[in-house]
Length: 173
Ligand SMILES: Cc1cc2nc3c(=O)[nH]c(=O)nc-3n(C[C@H](O)[C@H](O)[C@H](O)COP(=O)(O)O)c2cc1C
Image (cartoon, rainbow, N blue to C red; front, side, top):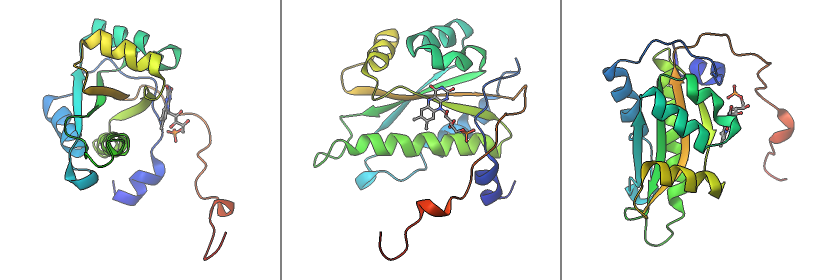
């Protein structure tokens, strides 16, 4: 699919086929995550890759009811920030860097014909703590978001809002 068309037509997918993803597909998705820009090129992220069904269910439960789709996904990636690598002048850039990595992975999946949904973790600290506990993460690794991936089993529903002129201000507010 052409790049721009892919961005414009992407929808969150919450129902997945049983079919597992190929290791090359998982690698391509991770590669796209690591291809994003990061502040001072700190590359201050880490990715926890999960395909085991029981683990996916535990991960979903640790993220609250809105993470239900993860229970049916073929792959879950916990996107984390790595504070040891973050820019020492403004460590909070890790949040932006992790967001970019996550969106790159969503778009890479789209390009491969794989559906995904972003499941928010940070800044809901109870979710952050639950994921930290589940995976026994070291203190400098902060859970940021979960991405659930898989081949779609159902068309996404709802109308996609695209361009809204009133969000755009030209030259002055
Ligand atoms: C930070 C963030 C957190 C989100 N958390 C959830 C979530 O917990 N559960 C869910 O089903 N979708 C979640 N989403 C997906 C949004 O609901 C979805 O992107 C939005 O409704 C627009 O739909 P679209 O992605 O199909 O364009 C999240 C998206 C973002 C960016």
